[in-house]
Image 1 (cartoon, rainbow, N blue to C red):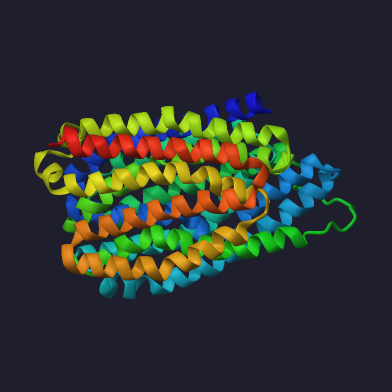
Image 2 (cartoon, rainbow, N blue to C red):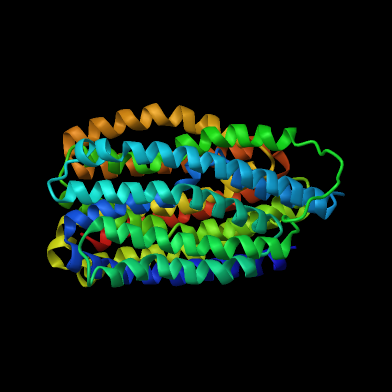
Length: 451
């Protein structure tokens, strides 16, 4: 099972690296063609699309776990297809409701919620309405991906994810040579996601007979709905903590200033898709085998060691050459204004990558209630810290608050997993030690290399 998971993780990571590289290369193009203010708003739109899962009430993740568990049990393909079809109908309806709400909120958001001047405010209204159209598309796509990952069809998933991910960045960047209207740029982003949906649905239909009606016995989905209920809480509160800072800052500072925060944040945080991709490959295997399976401990310890090499070392390398990299990427002036912010974000991103190990372990065991309760406790504390540090130190204070929240969240997830899974304590300690070692190395670089 470990070799199978490693192969799936490698496929997933490849599906992240190529689009991320294109995304990094597209930022200077967008900055040059659109300017800092429009890029600042564009990154807000990317953030919303990246966390569209907040709107599906956790069904996509629940679907992955349910399908993975069902394939390990005695479910017939018709029963699995029936559950998947029902879930896709629900997420589509949810997407339509949320999309309508955002459509009608577009004008007050674009005109009043952000510090935008004319004509950027008019462009923002158009962009928000395009995002409203995108929400049901994104949710239906996420549901299809969740089902395919539950079936462990990672090769098929990434055959679509790679070109779609590349187009997500490449098409807006190329469009910016002809149009500087950020609403039109966001429109191209949405059109790419619509085209992707036209690939995801046939791919799912080829793997599972979702288009055919099946006469099957009624299956007990109470476990899935409990999992979904708690995951709904986590999917609202968790992404809210990830994106709340940029929208809070957008209400206080002009878009050009926000870009010094959102550009490195979005780019570096997008890099966490690497550990997410690896753990997404492990998640169905964890759910399939259960936490009592002897291979589970090997997966957890192996994930920690792998992330130390494949995640910790590259981040430390970036930290050593951070200023020259920023200067080559976004220019000397932008780099100077965002350097300190980027250093804090880099620390948070490092911790967040390792946090996906206990997060996946807890959720694969159906304990989405633990992560949900943790997020509910963290939210008010983080909001208070964000407001206080932003008031004292401006945008840098927001970066410090975000970093503190992410690091504490990672530590608490490891502690809770250690308490919950007695038989897995040794591999959990191995994974946590890998995070501690990588963090110590990064702090040493900041202390001595930058001195």
